Length: 143
Image 1 (spheres, rainbow, N blue to C red):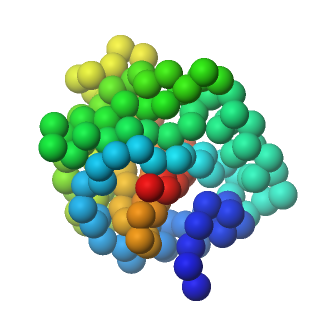
Image 2 (tube, rainbow, N blue to C red; image 1 turned 90 degrees about the horizontal axis):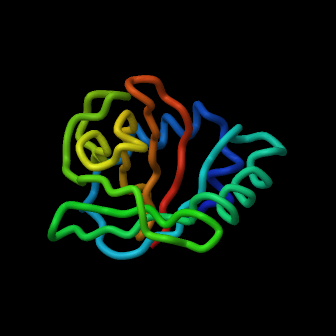
């Protein structure tokens, strides 16, 4: 079964965590990715929340793997902003290798944010968002 954003939105938090834990980091991605926020996973609200966030707030990320950086595509106008450094490191969820999206030195707005991603399928990554060390939400990136 091929995964996509709609299938991830229908999963429970436990299923998303299990999928992340059993996936490898994969290569650091390069290029533009469509992002989908996964809030209240597995509920009737998840798809509507994701659509609202995608339209008004966050549309995805643009990776430059060679330079080890990314920018987020934000606002209804789709500006590239909120820069992060990108590198492989240890996941806060299970201490296995993941791709870290680190905003601590690149963003005044998001300097307490850390994202972690792992490849879960061809051109598909599942991510976890942390504020300081507290888990907030999940997201997926489709390249």
